[in-house]
Image (tube, rainbow, N blue to C red; front, side, top):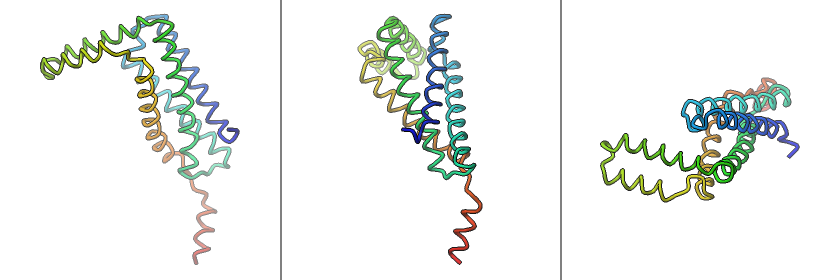
Length: 180
């Protein structure tokens, strides 16, 4: 745990930023929570936190780290964020304002109605029926959201780790000399 303190700290800060911004959007205009542009901004903020988590870890390692060493802090910070954000979503949508889940269902149904012609009436009706029958923020769906989030952030962490990795030239030179 102490080994990943930097990553945990960035994950907690990232989570706090998410919760504060989401609550501000909720209080100002709750429809902004479901806005695609707001989602993109929150996603980009997360990438910045993952990057800085890796950068601070690299500084702690003396300015050099392998891809694996760079991957771990980026992903750990995203794991902390994912757990807290999913827990926050569960509380917001199931306890604070359950009507938000219904509003999200209505927005999804409107989206399907817009694409009814390309989907076909039968498929559109099936999709609408599935939406109406389920709680988008029920336990099962939250687990799917969490698993998806962890997978997506692992891929992003892997890419950020490629940018952050920096091999120690002395180590490379010493390895080369040992082979000779």
